[in-house]
Image 1 (cartoon, rainbow over the protein chains, first blue to last red):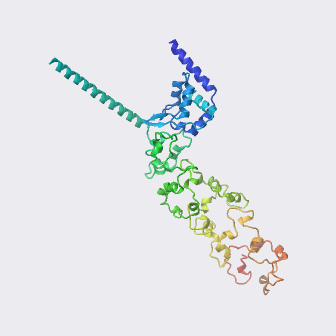
Image 2 (cartoon, rainbow over the protein chains, first blue to last red):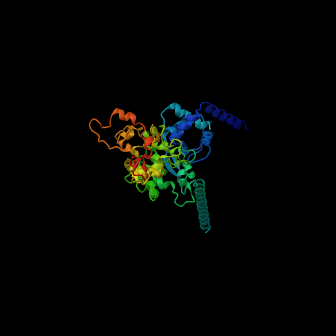
Image 3 (tube, one colour):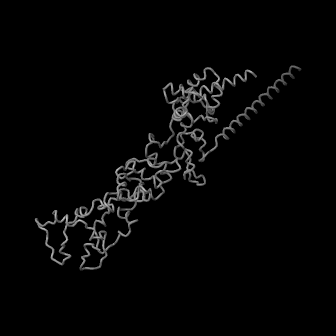
Length: 108
Length: 332
């Protein structure tokens, strides 16, 4: 029980920390430009998982930022309907903007 | 014998396991397929689930608004699908595994599109060519200058700007900038007010008249509203029969009645100026002009300023009189 409470508190604290430093309109603008919302939605599952579920899965993990950064910048192979295709790469090279997008996802 | 029995039992057990696993696997696959088809239902158009799985209300371009337009009327059998205009676009829907960027659909219509203009217009004309107002599209100025239908029209928006009276001129003025200035002059048709619009006189889809006017000539187009100028008159004014735009600029001018220049200068472009003592009116013999009495001198110009004060019937007169006042002067 203690462990459960501790994990919940940690998750809440982590999401709060991510949310503090997010420029939402800039993140959403870049994500629209990059076509992220074509496969992902904030709450609903589309071809890709919802950002809410991504945040739930990763925000307690210490390497969350690194994992998500790698995912959106390197274009790893993903499976959609059993077919493999490369994940789209975010349309920016600016590290600050990429960090902002990752923080946006983790704060959902 | 007991070994044989054991082997048979083992074989039956294995068979049961294989059958059961096959049954459950097929059931799971069926459930997956069912849930997928449930998740992907058409939203607006027939067969649009393929597209709307990505292009939904979160898309940066509001594609779903097509449902609020005539192209989204599902009761109409002629209503197209996404593929009717954009093509099957297989490589766009199923991104090749080695592709970094998703290939574009077969036909795109946005500003930077690589789809040839003719192919883009074919998507529209495949249905709209039957419309009689587009009969003269081929060879029209807009077709010859490589305009796409989507240069002016917006298909996915509820309110196509070019089909609304108040906003239509702004679409035309994007290219026709001189006319934008002219419609803001004091003497003009009520274009900025939205009471008269470009398409009241012009057919941008092609016509047999000059300047894409709706009717076969400029005059016929003007006469659709200004029918009292059509005649025929007993005494005609030839430029009126020839072309209204000899004297008028229908988009707007700084002279009243949309005249290109004010009288007497407009009239003097063709007519010899005269003073108040016109021999015909006084029943005198007309003295032909000579080098020294050409009539074109400063005295005459300044004397005869308001041509239209006396020549009120410049568009034509039906005065039956053959004597005074001389009807050929269209004084009344």
